Length: 153
Image (spheres, rainbow, N blue to C red):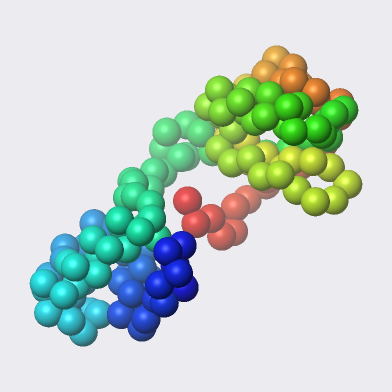
């Protein structure tokens, strides 16, 4: 079921699956692989986009070739978790480009961040000068990735 309450059928799910692997697939090829003619496939694709099931398309980058292959996961504990404090922290996170992902977590800490930098020195600077100075941060703990095994970026 999508956000509008519509049921996603086998064709919708196949379109989503194929495009999640190759967002540049031409509609004619997509239609052929899904088992529809071009026009019904285009109509379904447009509906999936309009309904927000498909949020967009993007390039998958080779981060090592861009010199950004250092990944660390940082747990963040806040000193205040009231709504205003969370909103202030969230706004601060959005301004730090090295934070690739940030998730609010239920558990022993409040947020889990995926941070991508060029190397450990750059990570240390980001952690010390940016992440640690975000509003209400009381404690951080970091795990450095030795080798990514499965990354759906």
